Structure formats: C-alpha cells, structure tokens
Length: 282
Image (tube, rainbow, N blue to C red):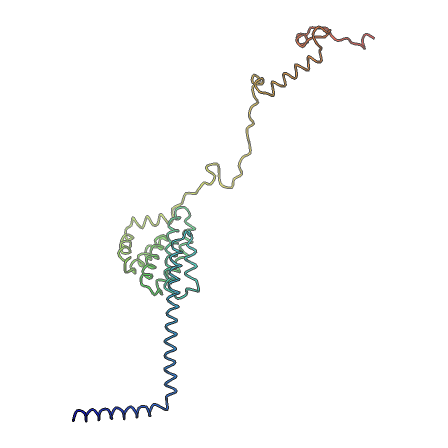
C-alpha cells in the first residue's frame, strides 16, 4: 500500500510540474516553433552543402588525374586546373599548383645545358608559386614539397646559402633527402660544380649541319660539267641521227654516182666533175 501511495504522489508531482512548465512556455510557443524550424532548415542546408562540396571535390580529383596522365609538355592543363573557378577552395588546387611547379623545375633542369637563359626564366616564374604554397598551403605535405622545390631552384641559380636554408625547413617524407643534399652543398667541390654550371659558356648548336653560320647567304657558284668527249659523240642517239642526216644531204646535193655528178666520197677527196658555170660560159 505504501508503494502504491508513493507512486501516486510521484505521478501527481510530475503532472503538476509539467502543467506549470507548459503554462510558462506557452507565451513563447511561436518563437520556439520558429527556432526549431530554423534549426531544421540550417541542418538541411548543411547536408546539401556538404553533398555538393563532396561532389565538387570528387570531380576536381578526377580532372586532376586526367591532366596528370595526359601528354602535355608545358603542363598547361594542370595550370588551368589550379586556377579554375569551378574548383576554387578544393584541396586539389594546391596539389595542381605543386605538380605544375615541380614539372616546370624538371623541364628547366632538362634544358639547362642547351638553353640556360630559357631555363632560368622558367625557374623565376615558379619561385612565386612555391613561396605562396610554402607559407599558406593547408596541407603540410604541400608546404614541405614547396620548400624542397625552392631548394632545387636556388641550386640552379647558384644561390647555395638560400638552397641550404630551404632544405633545412623540409620535414616529413622528404626530410632525409633534403638534409643529405644540404650536407652535400657544404662541399667546396659541389659549390664549384654549381658555379661552373651557372657560368660556363654553353656550346652553340649549328643548325646548318656544318655548312656555315646560321643566316649566312649560301654561295650559288655551281661548276658547269664538261662537254662529252668527241669520241663518244657517235654513241648517243642524237649524234647518230645528225651524222646520218648530214650524209644524206650531201649525197642529195652532189648527185647520184654515174649520173654526171660526184659522190660524197669524191667531194671529200677533192675529185669529181665540177658543176658547169653557166654564167662563165656565156
């Protein structure tokens, strides 16, 4: 009986408190309803935004993969992705900037001994990208990669002290390689090699194949071939035809043998009957 009595009392207490709470809140019911609706709306917008962001991020990485595996010597597709407005704010763009910069350094190193000025120009255009990534990139891997890239650039520019400072800032997976290179740059022999690479006169390419300086006007003096020897004249078809034609003409003019005329052989020997001179006889 006591348990039942105690249960009834507790139930009545809760009912009374609930009634009092409802009465206290009733004047603010509209405001509370609005707040609840607003919270639900914000939650729905957040879900939608996250869904669209995930879709954009996924599309951005797909485009990055395509650009990275497409033949593009100047890496223009990666550069376009790094600045594309439709992918602004995605993590992909930082990696696109880093990949483009790494590719430019690789191209500059490959052409350094054939066109050093063009290689230096390419390196100067990359420094700003690396500096921005090294200071403001959200991904630590990108920051470390940028410091390592700056170290390589300063080596090619013969700025050994700056290269060592950048290598010292590298952490993560590239730290061991960066520290090894920074230690190598302390060697006088390595410093001399970097200085020689930066200042040595490069061989000039001869685009004429050894025929003269580029842009020089070629000579137009051409030796005229000698005429064929006289003994070979009868071998050709033209010489044969001419000789036969000439003999026929002589025989026609002189006359037939036995007809009062002279043969071609008689004329050649200075013999034969001379033609009558009608004017002299008269």
